Image (cartoon, rainbow, N blue to C red; front, side, top):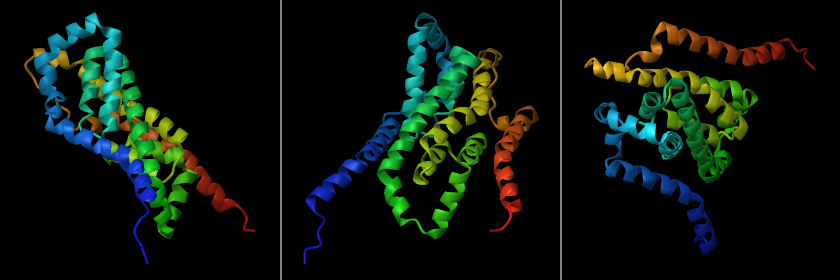
Length: 246
């Protein structure tokens, strides 16, 4: 009995996983070509005058290019894309740089979300056991709240939070909304750091990012947002608990 996989099935599998393969190759190429050395604070410090001059002469073009580059780096799951947020704040100011970062990050995150869903998401969902299905159901009942909290609290790497929801089949709309608004607080904090980077460099000091998000004036508002996001979840639990048994 011939148990070999039919050629058409193999061809379909190759086409299905091709996008993920391209992303992996692009990420490897980015590291191999020395990409990370251009996305760090030393690059910003050493080339700030050239960068600012170019932005002054080509503001709209540079802004669009920044959004595209950010989306590309997030799309290939480059873990250091967050440094670009500081670049954005330095080049365009806190507000414009922050908005451009949110747009680029959301576009890139949506791309990797869709790729993960349509390559490995469906097959994983079919193989999921009872516990995973129960977890998935619980997530889907409060998608927006849980996704928003995941974006607010940077407990997991950004690229992990981009992929896992796709495997749990959350709604694309909720994913995009939670990403766009959930990353705003942290994004504008780092963009504001970038906006003041010139003063720090002129003083001969180094930008300090350690512990930035745990400072009380930043942490307390974020905790407030988390509590607000949990209100619908708590309300549902109370309502279900008080509902009369059938």
